[in-house]
Length: 98
Image (tube, rainbow, N blue to C red; front, side, top):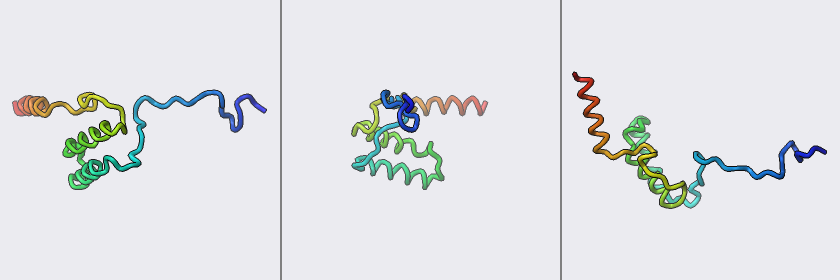
């Protein structure tokens, strides 16, 4: 028999979970309301996610509060301050219009 074990697996090594991208499922439905609001927004907006950012943010905040994902600064997740976004959007519009 080979040293790798049945079906070629190495029984001595433990698997290492990925750092990001995998998080516990919400088996207790703790963030169902937020998830449904977000999915409903996507349906009604024709799947234009930029129109549903506030629901996405609310859902991620719920998951972090319930320890269903690692706590992370919302700026790192792409949620800047609304005033900053509006100001940068106004600058872009002025550049396009000129």
